[in-house]
Image 1 (cartoon, rainbow, N blue to C red):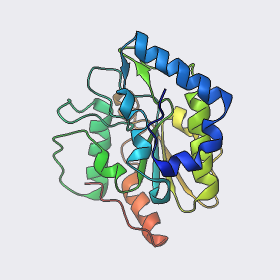
Image 2 (tube, one colour):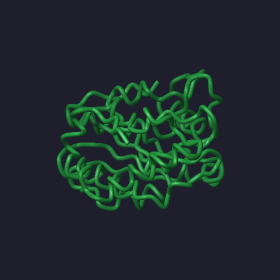
Image 3 (cartoon, one colour):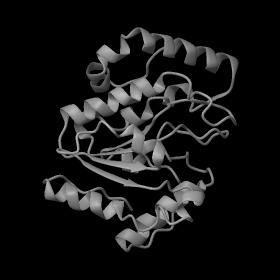
Image 4 (cartoon, rainbow, N blue to C red):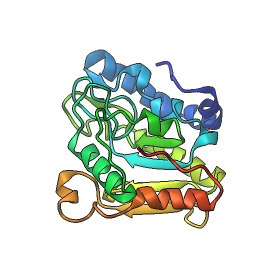
Length: 223
C-alpha cells in the first residue's frame, strides 16, 4: 500500500515506517480496504500529517478512531467533511470553545482543516475504521505507530500543547514530557461525559493560547 505521507513526516518517521509491524499494518489495511468499506478514503488516511508539518506543530489533539459513517471521516480527529451534520462531540467542542473565548460562533461545517493548517495536529489513535463498526481496527498496530508519533513530538519539540480529552487520550499521553510541554486533560466532549460535568468549563482553548503566547508562539485562531 502506498503511504501518502508528506516528505517531512516521511523523513522523521522513516525508522518507524520501515519496521516489520508497520509493513504488516499497511498490508492488513490494504486488504481491509479491498474487502470492506473503510474510512477515511485511502488517500486521506494520513491527512492529519499532511495538513500540519512537524515543524509547525503547536497543539496536538488526540482522538480515538475515525467516524465510521458514510462520507464523514476526513483523516482529522473530531472533524467531518463539509456538508456532513456536525456530530454531538464536535458540537460540544464548539460550545466550550465559544463559552471559553467569549465569541459568537455559528458553525456551518464541522471541517477542522482550518485548525490543522495553523499547527494543530488532529491525531486519531487509529487512523482507519471499517464502515459502521467503531473501533474495528483497534486490534491493529496503529497504536504503536501513533504512540511513536507522540513520542517524537515530545522528544524533539518544545512548548507543544497536548489536549487529552477522555480516559483513552489520558493513557495515550502518559509518556509526554510535561517539563517542556503543556498537557491539559479533561473528560471527553461526548454528550454522556459532557453532561456529567467532565467537559464544559475546562477552558482548554484560552489556556492553550495563553501558553503559546507566553512562549512567543502565535496563538491559534480557533474561531
